[in-house]
Length: 339
Ligand code: RIB
Image 1 (cartoon, rainbow, N blue to C red):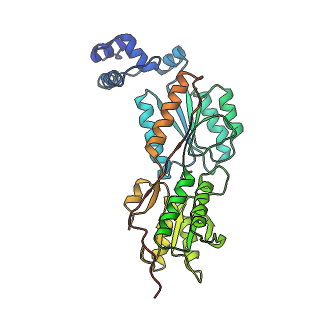
Image 2 (cartoon, rainbow, N blue to C red; image 1 turned 90 degrees about the vertical axis):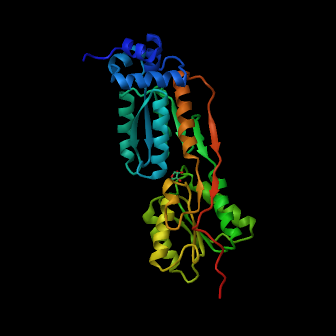
């Protein structure tokens, strides 16, 4: 069986040749219903567009670069999944780049994305990468920032209200009667959202007239081991905290493990609240109280905006702060009254 042609796809889908071409090259709006008909006709007929010819013709590769710190973190994995699905719906494929801990890789990846002629990039900053981003913008490549803002750059950004999330987590524990609430922060660079979560933590303490005790605010790194190590040390203190706010769910999982090793029951002896609401948070034992970041909206909104920006570089810039919300499960409870 020879190569399937666009004409055969058009006949199968009951649309014009031009419509199939617009779906392939993203050169004109096609309704979701028509696009789905064309895409299913392509998969049934095993149609494979000639990618080189296609990109030469339209100057587009229908490819989006996605640069994340660490796709093994479920938060980024779940957002990356949403981006991939929305990009596919819009006729784009994804090139994934993991950036964390290997800053030297940055330029390598940027070269790959530029040479692959990606049509746009969704970017999570892991450091002060303004020069890297400016290089991409100078190449005329549209960029969307998610999760971490670089306010000095005029780039479309989709982030969440981290300060509110930190406040809600801490206020929840205060309302449960806790007075010694530890906080395990994320990496202390100015760009990670962790700093805003700690601002919210402090605001809830101040509002309740509780002291901010630096001794129980500890620097973590967003990975589970740091949560476990810090919780272990905190529980060995003469006056251990009765609750802990971990600035992401992975560190909260580490806290759970440390508490159980130390013979603490959760939440009877220690309340734990996380941040992100990754899918795993529902399945820990006990299920984790946490702050939900709207991962689906982040992924879809960022992808939609990027696709619009690819089609028209002059549209107005987007700066969105999506709300966070508290998800109360079973890892937090009223403070145990001292005997
Ligand atoms: O879990 C990874 C953390 O880093 C999340 O809280 C996310 O906001 C990112 O900044």
